[in-house]
Amino acid sequence: MDSQTQKKLYDLWLQFAVMVVRNQKLEPPQFASVAQLFGDTLQQQLAKFTLQDHPLVGTISSRDLPMVDGKLKVRGENFHTDHSNYSAPPKSTMLHAVALPSHGGDTQFVDVRRAFDELSPAIKEKILPLRSAHVYESSKSPRKMAAISAEERAKVPQTLQPLVIRHAETGRAALYLNTGRMEGIEGMESSEAVKLIDDLYAHATQLKYEYRHQWKHGDMVIWDNRSVMHQANPDFDPAEYRFLYRIMLQGAPLTAYQEQHHEETVT
Ligand SMILES: [Fe+2]
Image 1 (cartoon, rainbow, N blue to C red):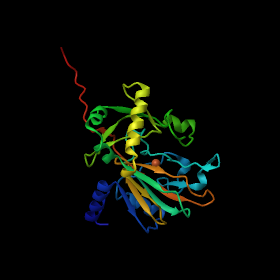
Image 2: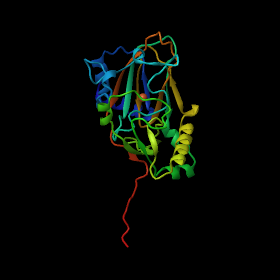
Image 3: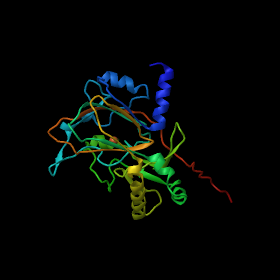
Image 4: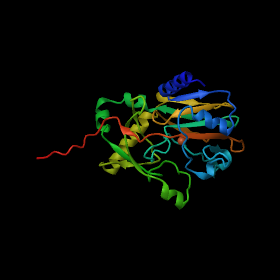
């Protein structure tokens, strides 16, 4: 791809935040080279969901999934943004569908930039200075995170993230939420923080902000974790095989939309 086309593609991706490319047939090395058009590939967090021959390419397989109460448990079963507990979370996640069930297993996205833009001025003012602690698994998490070894858990970071981030490339404001990992809000009483997070989450996950991707064989989807949240669906027949490759792209540390000035006043 020439650099002009690459830039055009990249700019469209920044603008729309979710890009779908149909009818691809990418082997892991080709998928990895497509990823390089958009950024630097991130090391996968969970070794057990990684291709042995291609350690930068992760896998999402229905055969890895546990059944709970007769229902399939998928990873990412509520709206979230990936690895938000990292100080520099992946700017993007990419999936390529290799095998799909006959129906179900859609991926939903919500635009958290528009969700922020459409908040009332009073709420905006209230949340702009706030930060939330993001941990591996919040004590209030609506879902169980993948079980990890004590050794892996010791390496998992936790980070204070702004509630409203400034996109490092476009400068746009976006809500930054992940109910599976947010452990309260800095300087706010716990029940008040939980209420605020729940209200923002309910606002941001309205249907009007959503694009629902129905997978077709050969689809490649790349999204911007700074601009959308996403959610997986477990509503497919567990006897059918669903298999996707996953790559994440390195991001920069997140910054607050509203710069904080912690100036000391000398009296
Ligand atoms: Fe995810």
